[in-house]
Amino acid sequence: MFPAKPLSAKGRMRSLRTICVTLTGVFLFSFGALLLTGKPSSPSYLDIQDAPAYSAIVNLESYVQGPPTQRFRDNLRNDTKYITSWTSAGWSTSTPANHYCTTDYCYLLANDVMTYGNLIYLALITERIPIIAKFLSSHIDKSAPPFAFGEVIDVPRLSQAIGIPLLEWHEVKDSESQVLDDLGCWSVWESVQRNKQNPHPRGSTSLNRLKLDISWTQTPDWVELTPGRRDDHASFWSLAMLGFPDTRPNSLELTNHPSPQHQVLCFDYLYFVGAHHTWEWELDYSPAWRFVGQHMRWNASLERIADAHTRRAMNVPVNEPMPPYISIHIRRGDFGNQCRDVPLDQCFASLSVIAHRVSEVQEELRTQKGIEVTQVIMTSDERDPEWWSDVRALGWTWVDYAKERTEEIYGKWHPVFIDAIIQSNGAGFVGTRGSTMSTLARRRVQSWHDGPTRLIKWGSAGADNH
Image 1 (cartoon, rainbow, N blue to C red):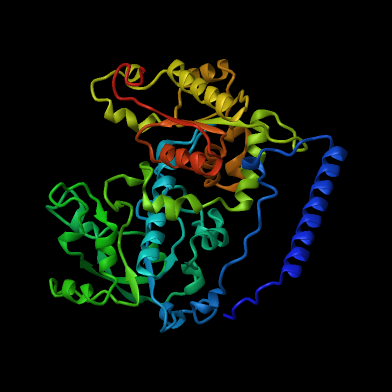
Image 2 (tube, rainbow, N blue to C red; image 1 turned 90 degrees about the horizontal axis):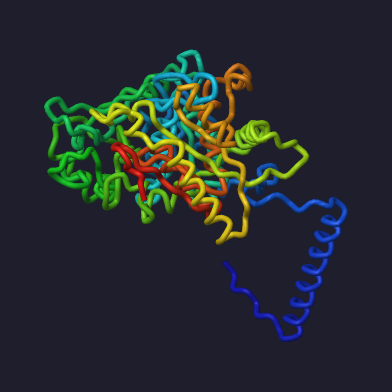
């Protein structure tokens, strides 16, 4: 770096004059364009087509040897350390029908996003480069190919926001390679799982796809976030310690298993990880959300597809600005298993309760931001046609994926993606307490659009009365 040469007073005056002239020109150009079009620009949170272009902050070849290789180690640089893990449960155990996004199909999307958010946060605090596997499709449709992380998330934008490069496995190892690579990994799940009668590593079909032969080493018990409570959670910094030279050898003395390799820090399962508290993504201080999650914006091509579906749901022509709307996510489905002896119509909040929460969000938008929002879009796993008829009676709308032929045109993944994007692009949001899908949508609306949100309580009669 060379020190900047100080400007003279005359030079500073010239610079100031130049800036003023430039700003004046920009203002006049923008004002003229507004007069010509006769239309104000759409709200910033809906400017999908004009999203800023982000270039990668680094050349990825600075962190790998070159194009994908048959053996992944042949592509790693000796002067670079890496970290990896995988999703475990896939995205779904069922497929959406008609206009609803089934619970498993949707909340596993949120779980997998959180898992990779935790992985990337661990990469930050261990100063390593994350290698991210594809999202699995085996629980959606075995014939459907998995989706690359970068096909869902805007990787260049994320990389620039957090200040480190991100690698994907298909950029390191040839996806068509049949070479079996050995890799030593830490098993977190053996140490933290509640059922310790038969502890075992958390498997993933990604291992077969990547042709990886894993030798597992159980992490020490001190990686537990809250020792003795058996809440499935591990501590970020306890896991991070295993990536540093002083702690790693001492931990390996505790076992007789093959050693995890130091260059590639590898864990079996990173969904249940926190810094101080369980289920931390729900909390405002969550480091994984603040330093990674909020920067995981959607891939632009997915945004465009979701934008088109949203416009048709609200009958908004493509040549008109997208109006602000309130998004709703109501999870019922498998939550009914937690109602126990409480009848479902009392366990779950009624539509009138949901409408009251929507009115609160509308009022907050009106008084705090001066926005009058009348459009409301529902996303839910509810399958009762009468319930959806009552939603329509409230003047709300939704995306009918059967009518749109979304799966036929784009594939079985896309209803999940579109629901998540619709939720995240609301000017305000109403969701279901305890649902990870709602948790992520709430955080996105708050962070991306400074929007008001509500989470509806459930589980007993009148649970959300207030």
